[in-house]
Image (cartoon, rainbow over all chains, first blue to last red; front, side):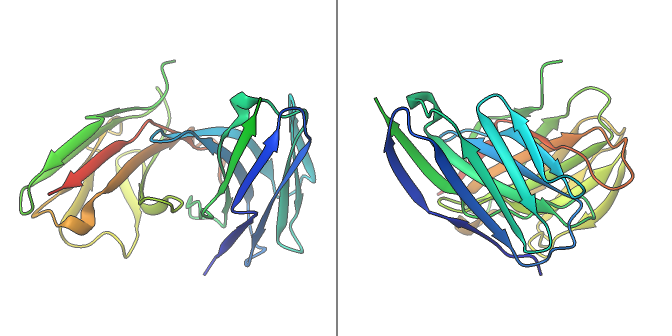
Length: 111
Length: 116
């Protein structure tokens, strides 16, 4: 059974800092991994999808890396802004179209 | 393309009542998913459709839960005889289904259910 752990559980930083959010998963036989952000009481917004054959994927200030063999992914946020404040969730897909989520990292960026 | 939509956005019901939620996926997306999220937790998979066929159901989906996607477009999730433990955010997602393995899932805003 796939289990996903995200560290840290919460993070509070001043604006402008570069951040690294960590995600680890127990079953390395994945097809892809998605990173999402979730604002309080809202749905999930897809940030990046990284295929199992890829090592990195970039979108604007976001960069996700994947080390499938060790069961790890990181989300790098450059030059953080208050608007980045949200919960960030990672979700590997081990096939059968089912995403398995961690409990997320709650990020607060203060001005 | 307006994204995935869900209705209602909020539902308050009394224990024992039946409720039904609707999800409209992104146009021409073949795959549709339901997830449930409780406070402080990540979403948990409930069920998945490829067109109108329900291909997988989680053990979380008890006999009181039923999902349909009759014409391969919108989907409904019904909960019968609701219990307080059913209180959660119910999220719907869709994906294009063009890849044999898996593809990017896009989520709707969710329906928040409160059972009193």
